[in-house]
Length: 373
Image (cartoon, helix red, strand yellow):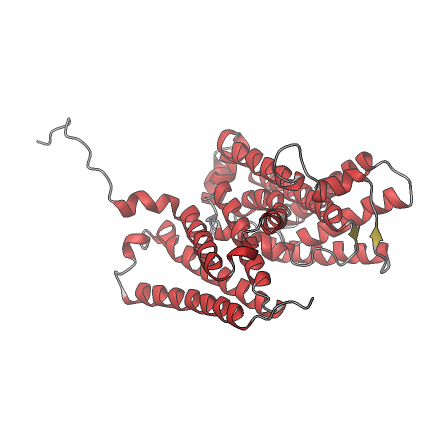
């Protein structure tokens, strides 16, 4: 007979770390970037103005990362957010500049338009049964086309103080206004994910949509809710971008979708659904902003910046996909890292890619020329 009072053995270190791998990954990479830049460019990278710029760049993506966390957790994807942001901001700009709407009214209309476009996306996916990837990609073309038709090549600039305050203002505390807005949206998303029916249903839908439907939960309705939230946050990001630049045009925000999806996945939210990390999404946003800023600080050409961004995204997604393999077939995970040759090969490949990125940063630091006076 076994002693019922015997203490349960404590899980090993690997088992305890594994649930937090989503947040540990980007945090380690953030620390490595900070360490590297502290060695090669400490004066320029860690000055207050540059840190403020990193936060401002990250803040632009925080609201969208919050909403995209819900979408991806439900096994969805939204490739239209850049066009939603541009079209919403273009309409807001016309309301202010040509029709004399007050900035608060135009701002609210912009958010409602974003929610409406998110609703259309959700209905296309749930009612017409168009796959998320194809449906949102097609709607991206539609929204971008409308923006181009409305703007006709114009660049609308010089907006009221409310808009510029949202995009680049300084709040009463030490953080810029857009950073406060971004953090508040992430806090709201964290609470919604952990403490509301919508958050619990989101994880359930991502884990097993068929079983969730059988319990009486309307899977389609909650998927539409996620896309409405995504559209609203994309519109908010469009306003933040407009305020930051104090200008907007139809071709604005072309890479929003890739940047936001990358940040959410790098932060540990599973592409296979059922696993979400709002804190990880914040870490992913900060990681990508720090990396891009580091490349700019090292005066590496824009094209190499794109290469480095792609390398980090591919590496992160490959590693997380492998780590999440056990969620699908009961194998894999951290403890399997050296169990078979395939895992060892993947580990070596990831190491080589990260080494190549560090080499690229080093070459940039070694060959960079001082900017012209």
